[in-house]
Image 1 (tube, helix red, strand yellow):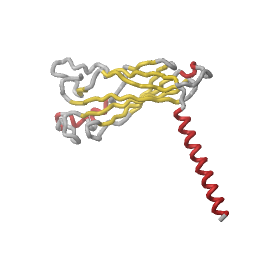
Image 2: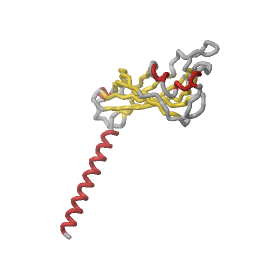
Image 3: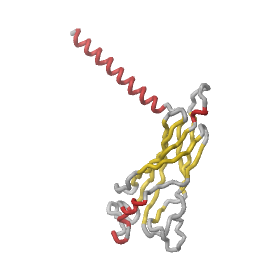
Length: 196
C-alpha cells in the first residue's frame, strides 16, 4: 500500500513538472517585447496570367499592393530600453490557400529582405514577389491555358481563387524572434481582360 502511494506521489510530481515546463515554454514564446503587426492595402484582386488584355491596358505591370508592418510595443514597464526593441525583418515566406474548393497550390518559397521597423513605428514593403516564374507552368495555373482546357480540373471553373499568405520573420536588435502575416485574396485567370 505504501509503495502504491509512493508511486502515485512520484507520478504526480512528474506531471506537475511537465506541466510547468510546457507552460513556461509557451510563455517565453509569446512574451516577445514587440509584436509585429502585418496588414496590407490591396490594389489588384485579379491576375490575368496571359497579361494581354483585349484593350491593351492590362495593369499587370502594377504591384498587387503594399504590406504594412508595425512594431507594436507590449507594456513592459519603465525598465526596458526601447533602442534594442527595433525589429530587423530578414525574410518573408509566400504560401497559398485555395478558397474555391480546390487543393492544388504552387509550392511555397522564401525570399530574403532587410527592413528595420522601429519599436512603436512602422514600415512598408511594396515590391515583393507573390509567384515564382515556374509556377505558371505547374498546377493549378497550367490547366487554365486554352490548350489544356482552360478550366481548373478540381473546380471546373476558368478562375482559380486563393489567398496568397505572406509571413514576415525577423528579430529585435536584442535577439528575440518575431513574426507576422497577412493575406491577399486573388483570382487567377487566363485571357480575362487583364489585371484589375
